[in-house]
Length: 481
Ligand SMILES: [Zn+2]
Image 1 (cartoon, rainbow, N blue to C red):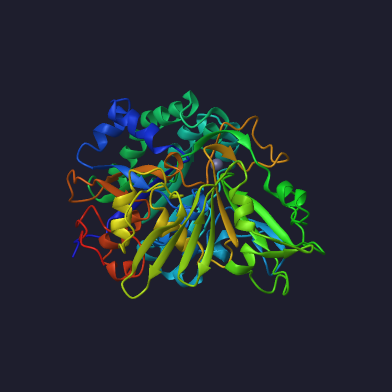
Image 2: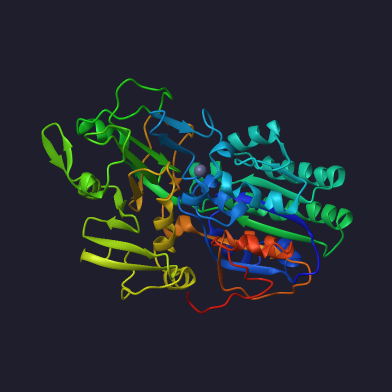
């Protein structure tokens, strides 16, 4: 049993690519952080949550579950019930969609008295809105860093929260100037420069070695140059998709297409016979009755330039993966809690080249960590557990995204995220855990942060059934099953 219930501080560097941060850290460019974490833990290989957008990662970090289980499948989704696109920035609230069964097991519930800034799923005791910081964020100004650190320090002194959780966003600068552009590197350097101000506040108020601190990024991004407009594509094929630019309930629509982070797509189709009341199953999707023809919707999207993977539910316990050159099947066995992935025809869509066999989540994580699509078997499977998930999920090809022309909130778009590629999925964790000096942790999932917090609060029972694994205080069992 872990002896203390330390204060907890989470610093979320939004959209900072793992390799960019790791490179700067290892080259000694981040002196203040290196010094502070010299007796801490630096995990270089951390797998994010699919889709690689803040909503799904936040759901994972606060609960230890994947996007399909937290019901956080992106920043927007199509509601079959309302027949309209729902967007967390505008007409929907993430807190209301977050799986109600997980509400009592969030880190806010475990740690207590939490204060947050920049959160989307607002399960914290108090959520502070900093309008000046939001302005800096939208302008891509470096001043965001100093401002966030200044306000966070003030919160530590004045409110002394048990849990402080705030974001510093590198999202805008990554999108506009590229995933490893000077702008995001300057943001990281600025964070290193300002960090001692916060460290001093934490040491003064909580006491040195009395708090648990995590610094991490939610996801990376992939450079993009070509765009595929999914709603237009549906229109070209004669469908009448839901509008994504005007959030309204429409009289007659037969489909919906939208992207999250712009590199992951969700597609929804009315059942040819029963309309929106029933989801089209695998057979229907493969032979969709439309205007006197039968269309293989999975094949149609897989053949589209710009689409790397098409995912759909195959049956209750499996998900199909379709690419231009082949098909694969992800199967789950609830009795043993293991997954199997096999190539059904052609070449392996996930490019794993592994012999098909039943493996545990931990084994899949380890086996796919170095591959182009890390942890896809377990995470793609889980995504379909959400009622908000599309009937079809798309992963964009390298250098492509699903940007819609009206969506011009940036002066340019050099990088996007949401997809499954390494550039988007790999991130890092810097951790300082009371009583632990310099543990070596080879790899982790970003949601494992949940497990370490739960362990420090003697709440390990809450980890049961989740996917979070404690890797810092007590190393995990490596055996499968
Ligand atoms: Zn973004």
